[in-house]
Amino acid sequence: MATRDTNVKGMRTQVGIIGAGPSGLILAHLLRLTGIESVIIEARSREHCEQRARAGVLEHDAAALLERIGVGERMRREGLVHRGIFLRFNGRDHRIDFTDLTGGRSITVYGQHEVIKDLIAAALDAGQQLLFDVEDVSVDELESRRPRIHFRRQSGAVTLECDVIAGCDGFHGVCRPSIPNGALQSFDKTYPFAWLGILAAAPPASEELVYTRHERGFALMSMRSPQITRLYLQVPPSTSLDEWPDDRIWTELRTRMATNEPWALCEGTILQRSVTPMRGFVVDPMQYGRLYLVGDAAHIVPPTGAKGMNLAIADVRVLAEALVAFYRDGSSELLGEYSTTCLRRVWRVQRFSAYMTRMLHRASDDPFDDRVQLAELEYVTSSRAAAAALAENYVGLPFDAR
Ligand code: RFL
Ligand code: PHB
Image (cartoon, rainbow, N blue to C red; front, side, top):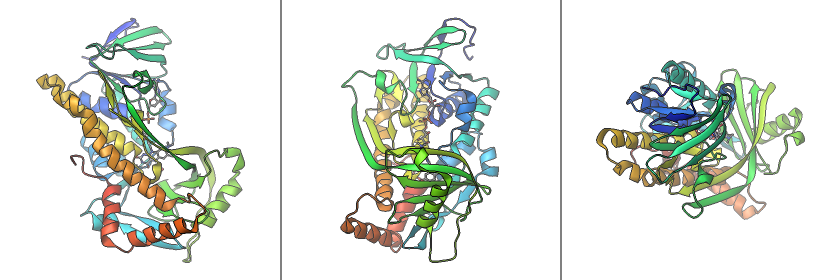
């Protein structure tokens, strides 16, 4: 039975989950399906979590997982199944045909905030303990068999005693910094640019995503629906949104995405805008005592490979399976392997994200680098083997890849 929040200061659960992003919500869902009890605490409001514009691409197996666990119904109705992407350079489009190159696999374009809405609705329907707007979150006793989460709600301070804590609190959360210095090794790569992203009330000008390499920098056209386009521009890391009035954004997008063929970007009202720095980051191990770091809390990738949410889902699958073995068989073996299993995929995905980033962004003024970049693009769009390698990674490496 779920622990009821009865305004008492002490609470108890099996798995304490910090963060209601994709990691925390999917973990709670998988655990619930196998009868393992959890409590999710989230620093922001439900509305905030449901509005945050972030990822848009689900790998083949990630979309299939959401369907299998009963939260894929709206995604199947409203999400857009894509069987390829375009790479645009020198004013020409080159299609990478995923379905042909990967034996029938595809991706689903469906906003992360829509995934979140579906997961929150399913959680509340099932009576999941999901506490929004909590404050002053901290963790302790991580090395003991009863790690604890402390937080404050309007009704007062709470201590939640758990068997295990899942740190699903994103890159800026409290879990990773609560691990003693020296226990984790971190790997950090700062890319010398950021993405300015907009959401616009305009129909997408292509049916599939267009990744563009241009002398002035990278540009990407993605979408959320047949009426809403999602667009990104490579900008310097220190960019402020004030420097980018609407006109400048559209002019720059038109310039970078111009083609020799008839093609015109559809423009419309800008509904949301943001600047995101580009970074690669990994901690090893992704665990300390009974605290397990999941998703962005343990690693982030530059968004060029569309991998962040997918990697979070991959971690969750590994942790859920390990927790099932822990509760059902009393075995800690899979929990002990959690970090090693996840990190194998994490580094492959860092590699792919770095490759896509390097191939498409303008990183220097060196004409030698320019020519190498164009050669890379020409190679990947003319060699079936190279295109298949891109496609295989983009649609998602198999979950059980060892
Ligand atoms: P999240 O989504 O950041 O969720 C963490 C949650 O924890 C809460 N939190 C706390 N709660 C309680 N106490 C605290 N002290 C807390 N501190 C934080 C936060 O409020 C939040 O609700 O991490 P999670 O679940 O690991 O999920 C990771 C993904 O969100 C992320 O990797 C993706 O959005 C990355 N990403 C993309 N991923 C893809 O797979 N495909 C894409 O196409 C894609 N495009 C993108 C992206 C990320 C982007 N930005 C904005 C970083 C495009 C962009 C522009
Ligand atoms: C998005 O739709 O937001 C998106 C798509 C592909 C990426 C990154 C973001 O590589």
